[in-house]
Length: 83
Image 1 (cartoon, rainbow, N blue to C red):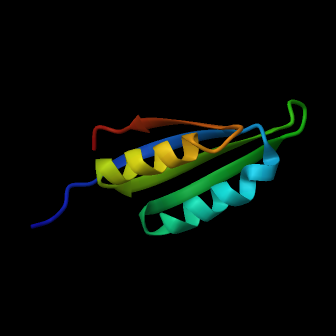
Image 2 (cartoon, rainbow, N blue to C red):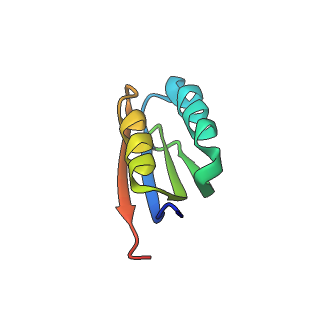
């Protein structure tokens, strides 16, 4: 039986850049589900803004978002598509 997947975008803001390595490790761990990602350093506010497009089962997306949100100085929000 095929597992149902969802398409989503995870919006991430990194305020503590020293935790960027931990974030990248997490994203690598879930790399099989990542469609693409875009990161923008915003020096004016000393933050990084990252968007990650994923296609994965909903529980996997929620797990990744939760793990990202537990990183100090990193926030994440998930937006699901209707696909």
